[in-house]
Length: 523
Ligand code: GLU
Ligand code: ZN
Image (cartoon, rainbow, N blue to C red):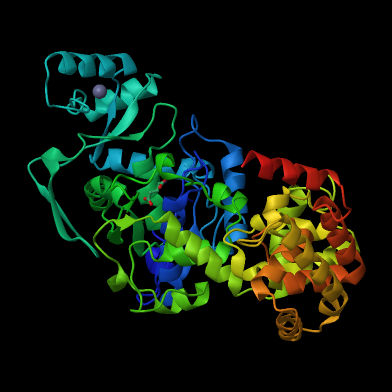
């Protein structure tokens, strides 16, 4: 038995059911995730059910890798559906290619009722009309309703004798179709302007998007269709289809478009759009979710950070904006930084570690850390938490802890206004302080100590620290020096300072002094 109306059986008037219905013809991207997320949040906010349905009837563009990408993306984001191909549910199967029998049955039903008809036009004929119109600069488009008036008996017998055909919807002409959109209000569409008698069932027996989408939304008891605004032009057609079946349409809410900063539809030209790319760039899923949830919706004034759970409690259709949402990459980066700061040391280390291993922090690219490296990595997180925008930056920022960094040119050691000889003096003084600094239990103690020593020697604190910082980290700009000394320990720190002293020409007559003498002479 083919089920025809589950709606009344399974859906009480109070419980809402919505769905994400992607076609696996590409990687999951910002727009799709926004649709999925809003559906998920809406269902949660109303104690309803969120359904995943794969609309895989376009077999020429289907690719299994896109299905895998869908599951991987949602796993990573931590967004779950209540019913779907992987978790099952009352209305299984949730994959349209496994439901073709059902669509054929429903197309037959429409044929029987005279709400659809068979079209025997070849692809060649349809193309010819298109070309003729183009040549004549005609504004007409779509099918010319050539087969609309073939007598049903004749059509049935031609079909029975094996003649290839499609099934088209017989749009009632001269009428107006009305529906209400939660965001856009009441919408009217003259039937004569709707896509003329679109195909419901293709000649290979596969349904088109329109038929499968409407049949499934009905049979799966979907109460609310939240989808991107680009589908709005299909909605009058869908409403006519519901009507043709004698079904009540679900409620519609077409979500605001997502644009780039230039006001054009968000695309690769603007930057990353597939979730995979954001993941590779070192975004945290929580940051992406938080930012995407604000694309076209406003929650509370003066608050930016929301967990998935909080969003689910707060979401409602009234919070959606009509205006297009502008995707701001800088704002997303800001979110990522905020979420990074919220992680504990262990969590941050776990999140950054795969990127660091890939970048070769622990040996060759891809090498897993030894237990000792792993400890050091986790212990270094407090040094960089405030400085990270992306997870992948950790490796570069703390690389100097995992091996002696190459030393930069001698001038890089010089504090402002100091010359080579003065810098050497400052670094010698710094060296004496290293054991004490490395042993200090916390930054405050180290800082107090070095300040005191700087005063005693009548040098500026900054001047004392600069050559020491470069000696230890290899760079003038680095994570905090005291924490670095503590993690490296006195012995390893002293080795680094000695290397730098040597470079700066600690031995009289070293090549470096000659270098400077040459330089001064040139000036
Ligand atoms: N399969 C369509 C898509 O790829 C679904 C549109 C809808 O939600 O009705 O987005
Ligand atoms: Zn035809």
